[in-house]
Every structure is written in C-alpha cells, then in structure tokens.
Amino acid sequence: MKILKICLAIVVLVLAFYFRTPLLASLRPFVFWGIIVFSLGLIAVEIPVLKDNSITRQSLISFLILTVTAFSMSATVAREVKFNSTKNAVLSQEAKKLEHLGQHFIIGYRDFDEIKTLVSKRAIGGIFITARNIKHKTKEDIKKEIKSLQAIRASQGLLPLWIATDQEGGIVSRLSPPLTQLPPLSTFVEGKGKIEVNKKVVVEYARIHGQELSELGVNLNFAPVVDLNKGVINPKDKYSKIYQRAISADKNVVAKVGLWYCQTLEIYRVNCTIKHFPGLGGVYADTHLQHADLNTSVQDLTREDWVPFREVMSNSGGFTMLGHVKLTGVDRDTPVSFSKQVVTGIIRNSWQYDGILITDDFSMEPVYGSGDGLEGATVKAMNAGVDLILIAYDTDLYYSAMNALLNAEVGGKLDREMLSKSQKRLDSGLQGLRG
Image 1: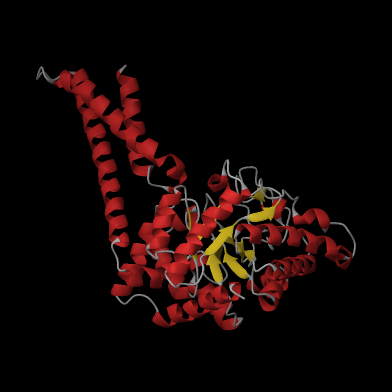
Image 2: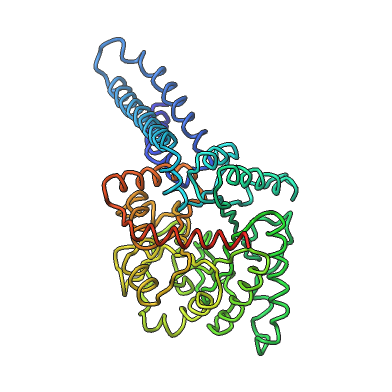
C-alpha cells in the first residue's frame, strides 16, 4: 500500500511541474483539481501515522509522502496564482496599449466567451478556428459567431479581425465537415505530365476553398503547404506528416500550383498562407513535439526548396508561415520563427520582402521549450520583423506572451521601427479585405 502511495505522490509531483505545459492544455482544469484532490487525500491519510511521535520506517515513509505531496500542491497553486496574476495584468491594461501590441496575435480558443472578451478589449488581432470550435455547429452557427466578433471590431472603429483556419485538404481539413472534404492537392498533380493541363482542376479546388471559407467569414487560410515532398517518413511523426501534405517533389510544380491556389483564394478575399518556411520536406523530426535542425545549405535551399516560396511571395498577397526548425547554416541557436538572422537578414533585407510573416504555433516545443522560452521568443520575433504570432493550441500562453511584449515596450526592448513597419503591413492587408 505504501508503494502505491509513493507512486501516486511522484505522479502528482510530475503533474505539478507539467500541468501548465501546452501538451496538457485541453486537460488542464481536470489536472489542476486532480492534483489538489489527490494531494489533500494523501495528506489526510498520512498525517495520523505521524501522530504517535515514534520514529519508524512507516513514519519516515509517511513523512516523505507528506513532504512531496505538500510541495506538489504548493507548487501547483503557486503556478496557478502566477498565471492568473499575469492574465489580470494583461486584461487591466489600457485599450490603446492592448490594441497596439495585440494586433500582432492570432489566438486559438476553447471558450468563445474568453475570446469575445479579448476582442472587446482590443487585445488580439485575430482568431484561429479549428475542429474543436465547430463541433455540433452548422455553417450558420459558425458564421453567426464570426459576425458577432467582427461587429465588436466595427463598433470600436477598428479594421476587421483576421479569421484564420487550417483548411489544406487531405488530412488537415479542420472545418470539414461542415465544409467540403477535399483530398490533398497532390492527388491532382503528381505523375500527371505537364502541370498546365491540370490548372483548371487546381483552380476549381481553390475556388471551393475560397468560396466556402469566404461565406463563413474566414479571411485567412493556412494553406497551401509548399514544402517539397522529399519522401521523409518518421514513424513517430504524430502531427507534421509533410510527406502526406506536400503538393509534389518538383519545385516548379509546387510553385505553379501554390500560386494558382493563392491567386484563386484572393478572388474571394481570403488570404492564403504558404508554409512552412524554410521548408520542412527534408526534416525528420516532428516540430510540434521536438527540436529540429535543417542542415541543408542556403545555396541548395535557394536552388530547390525556396523556389515555391519566392514565386508565391513575389506574385500574390499571401502570408508566409515561419516554421520552428533551426536553419543551421544561418543561425544554429534559434528557430527560424524568431531568428533575426533569418527573418531580417534573409527575408526582409536580402529578398526585400515586405509581405506579412506569421509564425507557426508558438505552443510548439521548439518555442516553448527553447532557451528563450515563450516570452523571449515573442520579443525576438517582433524585433526580427515578424508580423503575427500564432498561438493556436494553448490560449493561456497568450497572456504570458502579451505580458512579455508589454514589459519589453516599457523597458525599451522593442524595436519601434520594426513595429511601425509591421503595423503598416497589417493595416494594408486588412484594408484589402474591405476591397
């Protein structure tokens, strides 16, 4: 019985350290109360053993269990208090301050009332809608919710929110159903001879996405994937699965299909998002859960992987999503999504690109578990020339990230010129949605 209690105390201790990590975002309330209830239960059971004041093996074990359990419960409560303090600090800021920095965040959610509060306080620039947000809802229900948020923005005299989703087709079709479930784009282009022959099919595919998303009120789609298919298959890859999502192994095919897709979406005033720069086709690790390096030289990437990115970036108004892999030939220490050497040095300065850059989800391990941590990565991304930070999976992370920007601005650690340029890019993009 004592062994079972010791094991339970260790489990509670581990959960106390990890319950605020993104991996437990969907279970966090249950884990929190589970830790409290089990801790109190263990304490109640073990205290009587110590009452006889005799030092025995049993009493020493009980003392150890009590110590570990009390520490776990205290650490859990302290972390929860810290989170709520940070949340309140953000929400109590003046609307102008929140609006100024909040425009750089697109946030996923589990609680619509929470996201409505953030919109009301001008604290975010957009929302991310995924499968969990549309369960048991009709198209009309989804449309109504989006309209209610945009109505708040309009009443504030602000430009519209970015309403984003992940509707690639194939295995990543977050709004299907109720939207049409389409196969991956690769179905229509691989091994079909001259790609121009299939242009009508690709355009029709994009038309379905563009029209259906526009009718809902979605104005930003995280598609297409323009990573090259290099046939890399990792049996432990739970989420990335680029080999199933990539359009083709041929850079020219991907460039043409990606551009046709983006230009078609624009007809419906839906922005596309090409992803995941600098190209994840040759990356073995799943960057949702692991740190990863891309050791390909800049010269080779320029000849191959970056061809589709450059083509779409030069000929459409689409966004570019920055992945969390480290481009070791340029910056061995920092993932691309917040690397100044890559974002400022290559994309902004060398390529002279002035379009909108958005990060992949900052809930992912290479960011959250980096040496900079979520807060440091957020500040670095803004100073590097990134426009939008995506926090899709774990809404709670927004408050720490936003608080980091607020503190950095007060401390003079945010590049004002970068922020000013970013605001102009975002304003221009949103004005385009109004026609």
